[in-house]
Image (cartoon, rainbow over all chains, first blue to last red; front, side):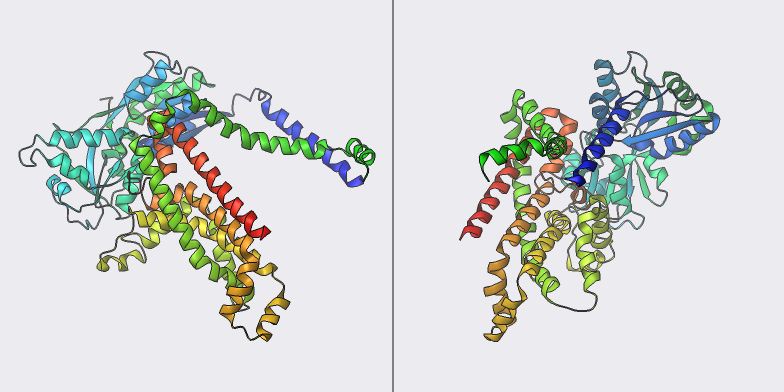
Length: 269
Length: 270
């Protein structure tokens, strides 16, 4: 039975380890702090750069990002995920969080707008030249799912294009038949088009900037959706002061220029 | 052992050393399953579970996981036999290749499939002149499931074939059996249990495949949206749909496990 003696010891060590994790962390030195930012998938490149600049301006601060579809992030926050800042690709998810009292009313502010366009693989396998070609039978069109803002906007745009006499009233119906997949976030659409597996996709203008080799077709401004991105601190943010200064930085001329570089429309002049 | 002795042993052995750690794991495994059932009981379970989206995902999941399991068994059994009984150069490398998908993250599997068999993939481009484009098809779902699940069958079947006494093999040869007869009349009946265990694992793994499927096959209702994909998207629509679908998947998995284990027991007893 001697060899059993180690087992209780091991269990004790394990339980002790659990205990440590549950205890509140000792107050960290003011220098070493982590700011947690939940941001829409379309912000991946721009916010990574903005985060690096923010870290450079605030020594000791680490910005930790969680990029995913806005609705996924909203669900995670509702289920108890801890974050300081939430940057959404649409107002709906922010409003839901306000209703859940996770975000204070009127604290969210729009920090950029984003429009959509059609992307094609570099070699354009289906030889798509105009929007009309999207309704050609057999074309492989990739869209974000209707639960994803970009997917919802893409369908709004197609419906609006039905009014265009050159495209005809059945344009959206014929085009939606060509949808081969409803992706869980907009970056998946970019990936499938970039790999040439889909003939076309409808994504944010910013997504096309991130992958310069993609070909693009503009959508007329009258039919396009201007997506407004709101940002806010969460009411239970562990680092409220850092959250506030991060949001202030995102709205600054400096960060707005970074956002513009990545294809977004800045709100600051 | 008398009851008296058994009692003495019970109180002198530190049984909690076994029980406590086991409880930690059982609580971790059991509570989430319980919670899913508990939560979904309150919602409009049948409205969600019988929704066309849910039923079409269930149908597609059962079809594709059955096909990929069939494929895994049909091709995996001979492969397992070769790996277990034959000696040749490069066998270790081959075994490594077969084991790899078991430890590989499904996202890597999905990307690898897309890069290899996609329309502009390394090998997939050769299929285009034949009019074959695999991504976004039900065939791609089956391929993704087979990629991640078949190795489980091969591992299990190989284990079964290895355990067989080599003397039986020699005896069969002495009796004039050829390799195929040896396989059919000696190996197959003796390795039955391992083969069934492998089938169970493969089937349930294929049923639960998510990562490789969404990357390689995409997500389209009725064509490539299997239950795990429908659950992921259901989560974003409403928790009720996701919960109802999860409960269905748990029930289907339990039935599958039960049926196959029953079969396994019968084979063992006969």
